[in-house]
Image 1 (cartoon, helix red, strand yellow):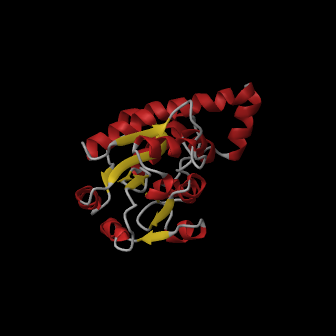
Image 2 (spheres, one colour):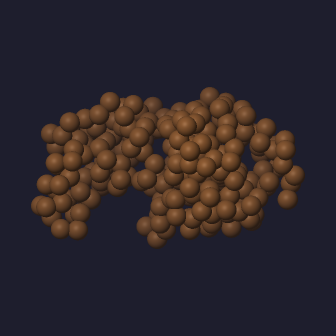
Image 3 (cartoon, rainbow, N blue to C red):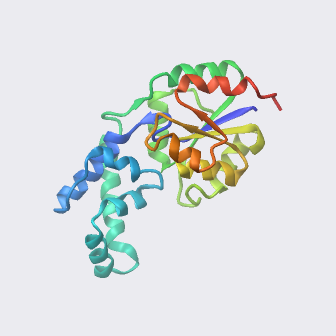
Length: 227
C-alpha cells in the first residue's frame, strides 16, 4: 500500500459539537425544536443539505417544500446553517487522541496522505490546515462540480492526485458512507471505532479492516506488501 485517504468529520477530527450547535442555532432561530448534540452523530455524513433535512421536523420540511418550489426554502436554511457554522467551525473541534502521532508515523513510513470529505471544500481545508498543517498532500472537500460520497468520482480524483492507484490506497472512515465510497472506488475500506457511528455500522457496511484507536493505523501496514 502506498497511500491513506481519510474522511474528516468523525475520523480525523471530532467536529460533532460545532456542527450540532450550528444546526441547533438555525433551528432555534426559526422556532423549530433543537436536538441533543449527541443525536447529530446519526445525521452527519452526507453533506450539509442532508444534515439540515434530517434535523428539521418532518412537518416543517413538508411545509417548506410546499411554500417554494424546487427545495428553495429548504436550501435557504441550508445556506443559513452553513453561514453559522463558518463563524464557529473551530470552537470545540479537536483531533482524536493519538491521531497526530499516527499520521506522523504513517508519513515516516513513506505513506502518501490525503483527505476526502463531504464537508464543504473551504471548511475542509481550513480545519485540516489548522489542526494538521503540512501533513496532507491532497485535501478535498465537497465541490459543486463533484457528486458527494459514496459516488466514487471525487475519491478517484484524489487518488489520481496522490499518484497512486485505488488498490494501493486505504480509505479510513467512521460511517457506512465511507465504506461504500471505498468499495465503489476500489480502495480498501478501514472502519474506525472512535468516530460518530461505531464499529457495528462500518462492519455491516463492508469494512475490510477495523481499527479501534488511531495508533493502530500504522499496524495496517504490517501484513501489506508495498506495491
